[in-house]
Amino acid sequence: MLVLVVFMILTAIALERAVVKRALQAEQDKLRVLIYSLLAAVDRNRTGLSITIANERLFESSLITRNSGLYAMLFNSSSEEIWRSQSTFTRFPGVARINSGDWRFSTPEFSGKPYFRLVFAIQWPNVNDKLERYDVVVWKEATDYFRQLDRFRQTLWTWLIVTTLLLLMVMYLVMMWSLRPLKKVGLEVKAIEDRKQTGFELSYPLEITPLTENLNILLKREQYQRQRYRNAMDDLAHSLKTPLAVLSGLAESGKNGAVELETLQEQVDRMNQIVSYQLQKASNVAGTKINKPIDMVQIIAKIVAALEKVYRDKSIEVVSELPPRIMLRMDESDCLEVIGNLLDNAFKYSQGRVVIYAAMLTEREMELRIDDDGRGLEQEEVQQILSRGTRLDQSSEGQGIGLAVVADIVRSYNIEMNFERSELGGLRVRLIFQTA
Image (tube, rainbow, N blue to C red; front, top):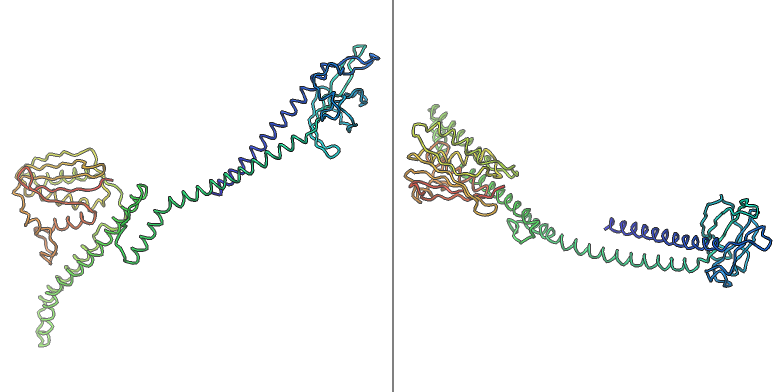
């Protein structure tokens, strides 16, 4: 708004100066044409020794009308007045001498009135064809000119103020209207801080929707992280019950002087292993940072190349139907964990054929499918290997841990994962996610 006010003021000043300059130039041009007409009416005086201006040859009627506001005079080289127009009724002040052939335009005041004055110095031959200097001076009252100029300035600045105020009002209304969604965002942030809601629930313009959607993703991931820490602590407490019970029993037996050191060391090691694993699992979450996009096609290619070497004895045929690039905003380690587990299961249980396929479902949503020709899994088995808490002690390796980890990771990134019967007869894993 400040820039607009400064711009309008500078524009008005520049416009006013341009109009004044052009108007003065127009007045000067008029007086110059008048002087040319006076020179066209130059004649010898009665003595023939000097020149004069024939009134009957003047075409400007104002010069022969008394007190018309337009006056002309002719001076010789001695600055003596040798002719004046019939309109001139008073003696005007003298003018400074200028070089022959020069023009001098000014706006002096005389008798309390503003005037335009144009002086032109010429050389004119006398009877002996000798050049003599003469000055032609034209005076024109400028009262009407300055009155019109004042009216122009008043109109210009009045409309400038009105226009500026209207523009400022429109800008203010537009600004308030355009910032309303941000005010709603602020109110929703306050509601989230006060635990009255868990995310952004209102609808926003297209320009702000990506912001609120990404903030909702961050909030959900933060909530998921808290839940994962809570679950990990529950698992830790539950997993430590048995070792603690054993230690408690050893403590009771120690009162009698008999402590089994081997059993004690075994339980301590087991507790240390449980704590390390659960804490690592709790902290190994796709954090709340915004990850840069990665190319999933390159990651799939690396994993497939490694698995082909591991399972070279099975001679598995891999059919890859992928676009040149699949950009996904995800931590590379998490992506390796997810794709690596899914492809490893496909290779492990395949009878000889694995198909990897990807296609766009919408403008930003993509589907990735991994099919194998193994025996597949029943829906109950899928729920069992993905359900959390089926086997509380997850410190040892075993079937189901890999997919459970995958389920946790994809859930943290809002990636949809489904298991179906593949057209090859085995298992099909479908991942649906937003591309970057």
